[in-house]
Amino acid sequence: MIKLLRVDDRLLHGQVAFAWTKSLKVNLIIVANDKIAHDEFTKMTLGLAKPQNVNLTIVEVKKAVEILKTDKAKKYSSLIIVNNLEDAKELIMNVDELHSLNLGGLREREGSTRYTNAITLTEKDVDICREILDKGYEIEARQMPSDNKQDIKDLIK
Image 1 (cartoon, rainbow, N blue to C red):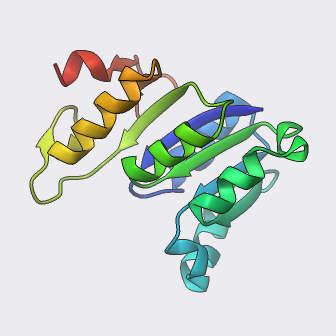
Image 2: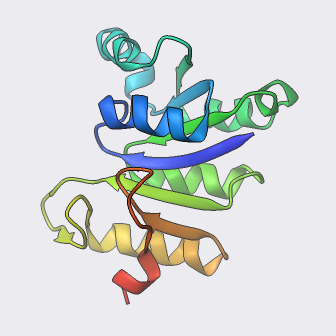
């Protein structure tokens, strides 16, 4: 069962690894990223950030879609993490079990505008959010599980 799909440009770090996994009671973290799936050093580093009792899989986005469609994946309580909205959209549009998206951290980039303390979006990001929202999905901004949800549709009006 997928507990959360999160966009965080830092991927797996302390607040994700411990606060979110504990709050959601997940036993599998899937990092879906085409570049990192082939970067052994970064994969090793991310492996050091995961809680001891949680499995970690780092794969390309298309492979994550394949995995999430299997019966075996449904037996896990999963947290899926991507570092950009394009990858999140790919997962949302191809995995029926996904119905919402958490924006946890997108740092300032060229052409981005700040929407919350932790979220900046480019025009392309806003377009992707609107496309996801138009399909009936929820998008919320929240860094920590204890934070109040901020509905993105209210922020990107």
